[in-house]
Image (cartoon, rainbow, N blue to C red; front, side):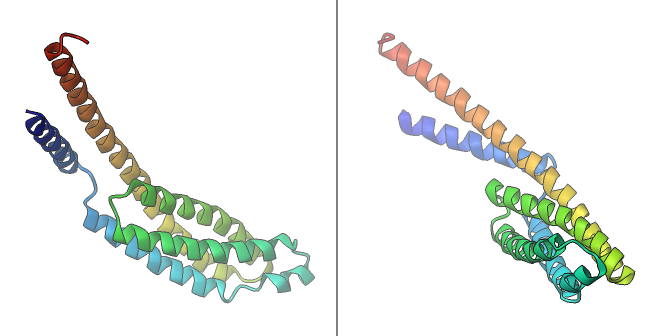
Length: 180
């Protein structure tokens, strides 16, 4: 009888996962495409940043913090790339989705500040290129945010079913053993 309960619980969890996918959860292939797009855009941003020279801005009165920020931004772009690649491999893993979202958010904030410095101390054209790349990431960030919500809702539904089934099994076992 325990084997049958396990089978029913497994079937209920599979059905919950299937229902959540049918109710509008972003398909994994779209998340894989998004991850590939993030990886590609990260490469573009790095190529644009290769032409940015924050050390030279200091002689024009720029704060030295831009140099540190530039180095951190380059490292964050690498972390975003690695996270996007992991997302492409495992689009269903919430931890990977969250990591990618957080790196994307951090990179967006840092890029915004760097854009201001580029515009003020180097070139409006380069700043515009960076701004365009940042815009692409903002759209990806919105999609990831919604996808995270969808995964959480689906996981909560699965956990609720599992909890309900566990309580039902517990009550059934308690009833057979006389409540001991």
